[in-house]
Image: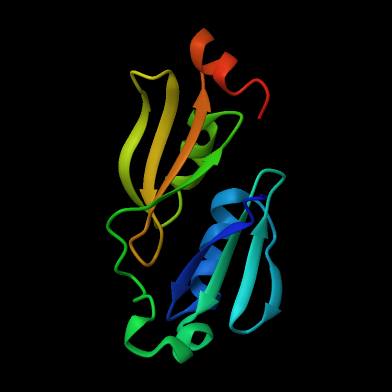
Length: 133
């Protein structure tokens, strides 16, 4: 099995694509006005309009309603990411903090309120855990 992507459903694809491009430094691949992808070596973040799930009717995901998933990006330097992002209009949830499990982490929210974590392993145990990934 190959993990392909996480898809975020939104009412405003252009706005959320612009946010993730600025936040990650990765230019999105825009397939249509309703669908784009932020493609990284480890995973893909798909960003799609509510129109792409309309056929699911009442079972369709609701945009801006996530309360349980955190989108995570491993970065080389969390503090550098923080310096870049704090100049933007982003909600900082938690400034760079070294977590008990050994990752340095910065938590923000995207325009739809989804939590986004930029992290880097910094302790020997954490570095070893991510060595092969």
